[in-house]
Image (cartoon, rainbow, N blue to C red; front, side):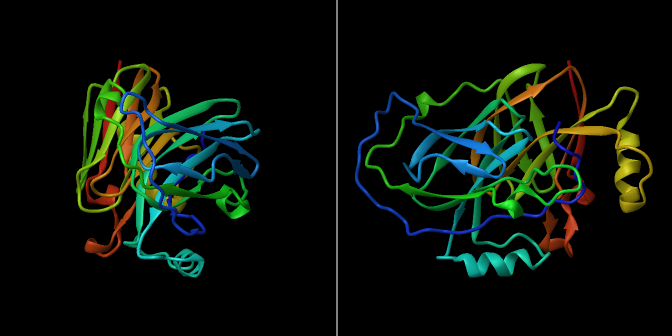
Length: 278
Protein backbone atom coordinates (compact mmCIF):
# COMPACT_ATOMS: atom_id res chain seq x y z
CA UNK A 1 0.00 0.00 0.00
CA UNK A 2 1.27 3.49 -0.79
CA UNK A 3 2.74 5.14 2.29
CA UNK A 4 0.63 7.61 4.23
CA UNK A 5 1.92 11.12 3.68
CA UNK A 6 1.10 14.29 5.58
CA UNK A 7 2.78 16.80 3.30
CA UNK A 8 2.68 16.96 -0.49
CA UNK A 9 5.49 18.70 -2.41
CA UNK A 10 5.36 18.94 -6.17
CA UNK A 11 8.57 17.45 -7.57
CA UNK A 12 9.51 17.29 -11.19
CA UNK A 13 12.42 17.98 -13.50
CA UNK A 14 13.49 18.96 -16.98
CA UNK A 15 11.83 20.19 -20.14
CA UNK A 16 12.93 19.47 -23.69
CA UNK A 17 12.33 21.34 -26.96
CA UNK A 18 8.74 21.10 -28.13
CA UNK A 19 7.98 19.07 -31.22
CA UNK A 20 5.36 20.26 -33.69
CA UNK A 21 4.46 17.91 -36.49
CA UNK A 22 1.36 17.35 -38.58
CA UNK A 23 -0.20 13.92 -38.42
CA UNK A 24 -3.59 12.27 -38.49
CA UNK A 25 -5.38 10.45 -35.66
CA UNK A 26 -8.25 8.05 -36.20
CA UNK A 27 -11.26 9.55 -34.35
CA UNK A 28 -12.54 6.04 -33.61
CA UNK A 29 -9.45 5.09 -31.61
CA UNK A 30 -8.05 6.25 -28.30
CA UNK A 31 -4.24 6.53 -28.58
CA UNK A 32 -2.20 4.84 -25.87
CA UNK A 33 1.20 5.51 -24.33
CA UNK A 34 2.75 3.01 -21.90
CA UNK A 35 5.63 3.77 -19.56
CA UNK A 36 7.45 1.06 -17.60
CA UNK A 37 8.47 2.06 -14.10
CA UNK A 38 11.31 0.49 -12.10
CA UNK A 39 13.67 1.61 -9.34
CA UNK A 40 14.17 4.47 -10.27
CA UNK A 41 13.38 5.29 -13.86
CA UNK A 42 10.79 5.27 -16.62
CA UNK A 43 11.14 3.75 -20.06
CA UNK A 44 8.69 4.55 -22.84
CA UNK A 45 8.09 6.84 -25.81
CA UNK A 46 9.95 10.13 -25.99
CA UNK A 47 7.18 11.77 -28.05
CA UNK A 48 3.45 11.21 -28.52
CA UNK A 49 0.63 13.04 -30.33
CA UNK A 50 -1.63 15.60 -28.68
CA UNK A 51 -5.27 14.95 -27.80
CA UNK A 52 -7.10 12.47 -25.60
CA UNK A 53 -4.65 9.71 -24.68
CA UNK A 54 -4.64 6.68 -22.43
CA UNK A 55 -1.44 6.82 -20.36
CA UNK A 56 -0.43 3.60 -18.59
CA UNK A 57 2.13 3.03 -15.84
CA UNK A 58 3.39 -0.56 -15.95
CA UNK A 59 5.18 -0.96 -12.63
CA UNK A 60 7.83 -3.65 -13.04
CA UNK A 61 9.70 -2.54 -9.94
CA UNK A 62 9.73 -3.97 -6.44
CA UNK A 63 8.12 -0.89 -4.87
CA UNK A 64 4.97 1.14 -5.47
CA UNK A 65 5.50 4.00 -7.94
CA UNK A 66 3.57 6.88 -9.49
CA UNK A 67 3.44 8.56 -12.85
CA UNK A 68 2.24 12.15 -12.52
CA UNK A 69 2.16 14.02 -15.81
CA UNK A 70 2.33 17.77 -16.20
CA UNK A 71 2.88 20.29 -18.97
CA UNK A 72 5.55 22.97 -18.51
CA UNK A 73 4.46 26.51 -19.40
CA UNK A 74 6.15 29.84 -20.06
CA UNK A 75 9.31 28.24 -21.47
CA UNK A 76 10.50 27.16 -18.04
CA UNK A 77 13.80 25.30 -17.72
CA UNK A 78 15.62 23.10 -15.27
CA UNK A 79 16.97 26.21 -13.52
CA UNK A 80 13.40 27.29 -12.77
CA UNK A 81 12.63 23.81 -11.48
CA UNK A 82 15.65 23.86 -9.19
CA UNK A 83 14.53 27.19 -7.75
CA UNK A 84 11.00 25.89 -7.30
CA UNK A 85 12.19 22.81 -5.41
CA UNK A 86 13.98 25.07 -2.94
CA UNK A 87 10.79 27.06 -2.36
CA UNK A 88 8.11 25.64 -0.07
CA UNK A 89 5.54 28.12 -1.33
CA UNK A 90 2.42 27.57 -3.39
CA UNK A 91 2.65 25.60 -6.65
CA UNK A 92 3.90 27.90 -9.44
CA UNK A 93 1.58 29.05 -12.22
CA UNK A 94 3.84 27.57 -14.90
CA UNK A 95 2.80 23.96 -14.29
CA UNK A 96 -0.29 22.39 -15.82
CA UNK A 97 -0.96 19.08 -14.07
CA UNK A 98 -2.84 16.62 -16.30
CA UNK A 99 -3.32 13.67 -13.97
CA UNK A 100 -1.50 10.55 -12.92
CA UNK A 101 -1.54 6.95 -11.76
CA UNK A 102 -0.18 5.01 -8.79
CA UNK A 103 0.70 1.34 -9.25
CA UNK A 104 1.71 -1.40 -6.85
CA UNK A 105 4.60 -3.69 -7.84
CA UNK A 106 3.68 -5.94 -10.76
CA UNK A 107 0.54 -4.00 -11.69
CA UNK A 108 -0.50 -1.60 -14.44
CA UNK A 109 -2.75 1.43 -13.92
CA UNK A 110 -4.03 3.87 -16.54
CA UNK A 111 -5.57 7.32 -16.83
CA UNK A 112 -7.00 9.19 -19.81
CA UNK A 113 -6.30 12.91 -20.26
CA UNK A 114 -6.46 15.52 -22.99
CA UNK A 115 -2.84 16.48 -23.68
CA UNK A 116 -2.05 19.73 -25.46
CA UNK A 117 1.10 20.06 -27.53
CA UNK A 118 4.14 21.09 -25.52
CA UNK A 119 6.88 19.96 -23.18
CA UNK A 120 5.95 17.61 -20.34
CA UNK A 121 7.54 16.11 -17.25
CA UNK A 122 6.58 12.93 -15.41
CA UNK A 123 7.64 11.94 -11.91
CA UNK A 124 6.89 9.68 -8.97
CA UNK A 125 6.00 10.88 -5.47
CA UNK A 126 6.31 7.42 -3.98
CA UNK A 127 9.15 6.32 -1.76
CA UNK A 128 10.28 3.40 0.32
CA UNK A 129 10.02 3.86 4.08
CA UNK A 130 12.66 6.30 5.37
CA UNK A 131 13.92 6.90 1.82
CA UNK A 132 13.93 10.04 -0.33
CA UNK A 133 11.03 10.46 -2.79
CA UNK A 134 11.41 8.50 -6.03
CA UNK A 135 11.85 11.72 -8.00
CA UNK A 136 14.90 12.63 -5.95
CA UNK A 137 16.40 9.25 -6.81
CA UNK A 138 16.05 9.75 -10.54
CA UNK A 139 12.47 8.68 -11.25
CA UNK A 140 11.78 11.69 -13.40
CA UNK A 141 11.09 11.58 -17.11
CA UNK A 142 10.40 13.93 -19.98
CA UNK A 143 7.98 13.81 -22.87
CA UNK A 144 7.28 15.86 -25.98
CA UNK A 145 3.66 16.10 -27.13
CA UNK A 146 3.30 17.01 -30.79
CA UNK A 147 0.36 18.83 -32.39
CA UNK A 148 -1.99 16.68 -34.51
CA UNK A 149 -4.41 17.75 -37.23
CA UNK A 150 -7.39 15.58 -36.23
CA UNK A 151 -8.23 15.10 -32.58
CA UNK A 152 -9.77 11.96 -31.11
CA UNK A 153 -13.55 12.20 -30.94
CA UNK A 154 -14.86 12.34 -27.37
CA UNK A 155 -17.12 9.36 -28.18
CA UNK A 156 -13.95 7.26 -27.81
CA UNK A 157 -13.56 8.29 -24.16
CA UNK A 158 -14.19 5.65 -21.48
CA UNK A 159 -17.55 5.45 -19.74
CA UNK A 160 -17.19 6.64 -16.16
CA UNK A 161 -18.88 4.85 -13.28
CA UNK A 162 -18.65 7.90 -11.02
CA UNK A 163 -17.36 11.45 -10.80
CA UNK A 164 -15.17 13.53 -8.51
CA UNK A 165 -15.25 17.31 -8.93
CA UNK A 166 -12.51 19.36 -7.25
CA UNK A 167 -13.60 22.88 -6.38
CA UNK A 168 -12.47 25.68 -4.05
CA UNK A 169 -12.59 24.11 -1.37
CA UNK A 170 -14.56 20.90 -1.39
CA UNK A 171 -15.14 17.61 -3.20
CA UNK A 172 -18.33 16.83 -5.07
CA UNK A 173 -18.46 13.02 -5.31
CA UNK A 174 -21.10 10.97 -7.14
CA UNK A 175 -21.63 7.37 -8.20
CA UNK A 176 -18.55 5.68 -6.71
CA UNK A 177 -18.95 1.98 -6.00
CA UNK A 178 -16.83 -0.91 -4.78
CA UNK A 179 -14.49 -2.66 -7.19
CA UNK A 180 -12.32 -1.45 -10.04
CA UNK A 181 -13.88 1.36 -12.03
CA UNK A 182 -13.19 4.37 -14.22
CA UNK A 183 -13.84 7.68 -12.48
CA UNK A 184 -14.10 11.06 -14.20
CA UNK A 185 -12.13 13.58 -12.14
CA UNK A 186 -12.35 17.28 -12.97
CA UNK A 187 -10.81 20.39 -11.48
CA UNK A 188 -13.65 22.90 -11.53
CA UNK A 189 -11.92 25.32 -9.18
CA UNK A 190 -9.42 28.13 -9.66
CA UNK A 191 -6.39 26.52 -7.97
CA UNK A 192 -4.36 23.34 -8.39
CA UNK A 193 -6.12 20.58 -6.44
CA UNK A 194 -5.61 16.95 -5.61
CA UNK A 195 -7.79 14.13 -4.40
CA UNK A 196 -5.67 12.12 -1.98
CA UNK A 197 -7.78 9.10 -1.09
CA UNK A 198 -7.43 7.18 2.18
CA UNK A 199 -9.35 4.12 3.34
CA UNK A 200 -10.14 4.24 7.06
CA UNK A 201 -8.86 1.20 8.92
CA UNK A 202 -11.41 -1.08 10.56
CA UNK A 203 -12.67 0.45 13.78
CA UNK A 204 -11.41 3.94 12.87
CA UNK A 205 -13.66 6.92 12.22
CA UNK A 206 -13.51 10.20 10.35
CA UNK A 207 -13.15 11.92 13.72
CA UNK A 208 -10.09 9.76 14.46
CA UNK A 209 -8.62 10.82 11.14
CA UNK A 210 -9.28 14.49 11.86
CA UNK A 211 -7.63 14.18 15.29
CA UNK A 212 -4.59 12.54 13.72
CA UNK A 213 -4.29 15.30 11.13
CA UNK A 214 -4.68 18.06 13.72
CA UNK A 215 -1.89 16.54 15.81
CA UNK A 216 0.55 16.82 12.90
CA UNK A 217 4.07 15.79 13.88
CA UNK A 218 2.87 15.19 17.44
CA UNK A 219 0.49 12.42 16.35
CA UNK A 220 0.95 9.18 18.29
CA UNK A 221 0.57 5.65 17.02
CA UNK A 222 -0.06 4.43 13.49
CA UNK A 223 -2.24 6.45 11.12
CA UNK A 224 -5.94 5.55 11.16
CA UNK A 225 -6.05 5.07 7.38
CA UNK A 226 -4.05 3.84 4.40
CA UNK A 227 -3.55 5.95 1.30
CA UNK A 228 -4.81 4.08 -1.76
CA UNK A 229 -4.49 6.64 -4.54
CA UNK A 230 -4.20 10.28 -5.51
CA UNK A 231 -5.10 12.44 -8.49
CA UNK A 232 -3.59 15.89 -9.19
CA UNK A 233 -5.20 18.33 -11.61
CA UNK A 234 -4.71 21.95 -12.58
CA UNK A 235 -7.83 24.12 -13.12
CA UNK A 236 -9.87 23.27 -16.20
CA UNK A 237 -8.47 19.76 -16.64
CA UNK A 238 -10.34 16.45 -16.74
CA UNK A 239 -8.93 12.96 -16.36
CA UNK A 240 -10.47 9.50 -16.40
CA UNK A 241 -8.70 7.53 -13.67
CA UNK A 242 -8.85 3.83 -12.93
CA UNK A 243 -9.51 3.48 -9.19
CA UNK A 244 -10.17 0.45 -6.99
CA UNK A 245 -12.34 0.66 -3.87
CA UNK A 246 -13.04 -2.04 -1.32
CA UNK A 247 -16.27 -1.59 0.62
CA UNK A 248 -15.63 0.78 3.50
CA UNK A 249 -15.29 4.38 4.59
CA UNK A 250 -12.86 6.70 2.84
CA UNK A 251 -11.43 10.16 3.36
CA UNK A 252 -10.76 12.48 0.42
CA UNK A 253 -8.56 15.50 1.06
CA UNK A 254 -6.29 18.05 -0.59
CA UNK A 255 -2.93 19.02 0.94
CA UNK A 256 -2.09 21.79 -1.56
CA UNK A 257 -1.39 25.16 0.14
CA UNK A 258 -3.50 28.13 -0.92
CA UNK A 259 -1.59 31.24 -1.88
CA UNK A 260 -4.89 33.14 -1.68
CA UNK A 261 -5.29 32.13 1.97
CA UNK A 262 -1.86 32.68 3.55
CA UNK A 263 -0.58 29.25 2.44
CA UNK A 264 -3.24 27.40 4.43
CA UNK A 265 -3.54 23.80 3.18
CA UNK A 266 -6.78 23.23 1.31
CA UNK A 267 -7.96 20.54 3.74
CA UNK A 268 -7.92 23.17 6.50
CA UNK A 269 -10.20 25.30 4.32
CA UNK A 270 -12.79 22.53 4.15
CA UNK A 271 -11.39 20.29 1.42
CA UNK A 272 -11.60 17.06 3.42
CA UNK A 273 -14.62 14.79 3.39
CA UNK A 274 -15.72 11.27 4.27
CA UNK A 275 -17.13 9.03 1.53
CA UNK A 276 -18.84 5.70 2.24
CA UNK A 277 -18.53 3.08 -0.51
CA UNK A 278 -20.60 -0.11 -0.42
